[in-house]
Every structure is written in structure tokens, then in C-alpha cells.
Image (tube, rainbow, N blue to C red; front, side, top):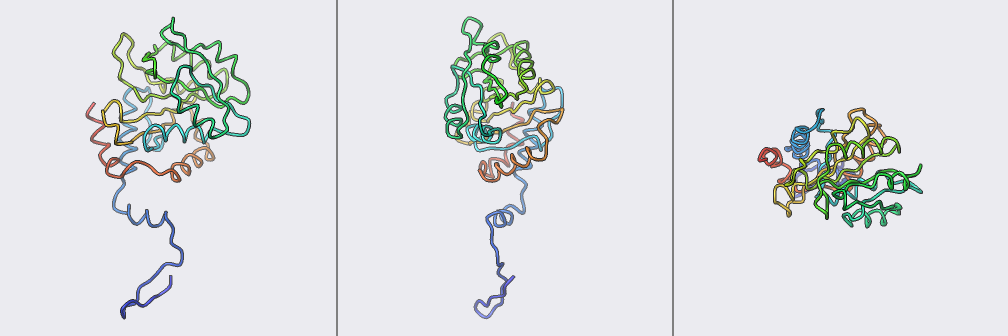
Length: 254
């Protein structure tokens, strides 16, 4: 620390000022991110056969940021990702931006827009890092059965790849099939669950989303993977502090 004089008073000025240090001072009296992670872990655990820990949850500025983070941390030279067709176009855009090859599998309209699992197996190879499942479906509005989701998990396990489960429309199911989170099958294959508050809570402008590691066996909890995930979230920033603070109350509305 250097001592500087200001109007006759001596004040201490740090030699090195960092953004992280400034943010630490600003946030010293609040644990907004921790509150949000704890609230979301409790909320998302309701429909799982195991309990999520707060450290399994990464809070993002909407689900689009969660998509960007997920594709960035799994990417590597020569990698490819399997995407549904029709699907949410942001996945293809993010993959292209990261030079991650996108391979598309069809959804079958005659089977309620289920995944063509034989096509998935034909598309995958040793460079496949993930397959994306959107449930409830966007744009088709399909809601997958427990059995179909289990078959997806079993296919991913055979291929040795993880599942990215986009559940932005989670619990917005109005037909005969109840919503089943893909994380139920986290013991079969690792699942990265993406979601946000915008749809179910009708607050699109709040921009609060999440990325969750549904991985009870710990295959995604290697120090290297977790460190990359934490650093990327630190770089990207997150939703507004006051929204994170209110998450613990919002989660109990539904």
C-alpha cells in the first residue's frame, strides 16, 4: 500500500486495483449469488431422486448465456455436438461461433416429435461431446415421456457423451405427458440442465437463468472441469444482484 496525502490527511492507496477486488468490496455485505444457488438447488431437487448442492448450480444472465457457457466449456479442437431439428437456432449460432461442428438429428412428427435415436447413433463418433435435448420442445411443444427420456440417457451412455437438457419450458406441460426433468437420469449419463425464470414465472425481462450439473456419480466434478466452469461464469458475469436476492422467494411461488 502507498500512502498519499489528500487535504492534509494521509490515505492508503493500493498499488494494484482489480475489478475482482472492487466487486468484492461492493458485494461484501451480501451473498446474493449464494442465496440464488441455494434456492435453485432446493427448487430443482424437488423432482429428482437425489439432492442438488448449491455448488451444482451456476446462475446466468438468462438461458442464452447458459447455452453459450455450456457449449464453450465442452468444446475442444475437432469436437462436434448433436442438435435437434427442428430446434432452437441459438445452439447452431453458438456452435458456429465457437467453431464447434453441429450435426443435426431429426425429430419424428409421427411419434410426437421424439428423438430419432438411430440417427443419433449414426451421427455420433469419438469427437461427439454432447447431444442437446429440448424438453418441453421448442418449437414443436412436445413433452417427452419418462420412457423416451430414459432411452435418450441410455443412448448417451452407450455413446459416452453427456446430455445438455434445455428445460426453459419445464413444467409448462398441458397434455397427457407430465414434465420429467432429464436430471432424473443423471446416474445413467451426465446431464447439464439449462433453464430460466422467464417462461414459467412470466418475467422475461429479468434475465435470470441457470446451468446445473446433474451428476450424482461425480463424473463432471473433476477439478479441471469445475474450475473452467467457474472461471467462465466469472468472466461472463450474471444477472442483477437484486434479482438474485429475490430468487429464494420466487422459487416458492410455484
